[in-house]
Image (cartoon, rainbow, N blue to C red):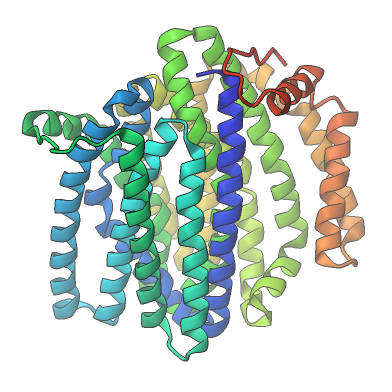
Length: 485
């Protein structure tokens, strides 16, 4: 796998996330406007609960696939059959047990919770299939599946809301959309992998794969604990209206963090391959990625800091004005979050999942404690401060155990100095443009930022040359050096 293909796939995956999740944000905004903060809080709580139920079915299979199938693409069929069958069995069992429990003990509408769990389980199958597309460096196939779901989800969701149905109708339409997308993904993957006429099941090989995924499962549990616990605590320590305000701000934050998720979707398979084949390419690609993660994060930080009020009112209307300070707090966590994705991927590529597992569990404990302390004093803003604090601590830990050996602190500061200064220039421009229309302020600020990046030399001649070769020679698969910054 060439560095050039890595960048192509990164850009393609970023495009996927922008298009698919952009539609997802539009869908969420429509739901928020129809349902209001309290019902939106119920929706967010149901999805948070569902995300815990889905953990056994996910079991870290996606990360295992991206690491192993990227090294041995011929194993696509074997991994899909083995892990997919086990995943299906776990999913059906989990859904049945949860539906019975929700019916007997839940204080929230059992139908809402069960529909949320069913949707999340089926959605995990779409993510599972997409991990094979990423491992095989076929991001365009993931794009087709993701957009099919996103378009269907928003069209059916808006239709059902305008028809007068509320939360149950929305979740039912989401389940229908994701189910159709999984069927599409299955047939695409079947053609890609060259399915045999009579699949052969091998129990021992299947359980070996499950055992190999065990560290990833532990990582997944800790990550879900960190990501979802704020909603759960708010539901019990505050109220569903506070959950709604928190969810509206975190939805925007989550949409922005999908940029590093997309980049590392291409980054992980390449780095996994470079780790066993070419150390110098491993290091160069890592430094390049850290630099451009920062470049992508800076304008988002500026926009959320200076235009949070305009963004919240524009998206959710005045009823969600209480979410404005929440978005400003979450914006502070963006750089840490972007770099954390890189640190995690480096540890996985180096087969150091157990070390990653330990660090994530430490940070998960910090996050749980932070939520307990901050929410009791500051409600949903406390949950936002818990996210910001945890992301900063996690980034420092990952740098110490994963990145420092390849990128010294002095070198890291040199990499980000010019982009940071360009961000300061952008901040001044956005501040001056605040009285203008929101889109003009954002686009004007971004234009100033890009100009400052070039003027200050943040985008080096080596970077420019590399991107020109990328555009000019899309079919070339020769190794292309990234160059030192």
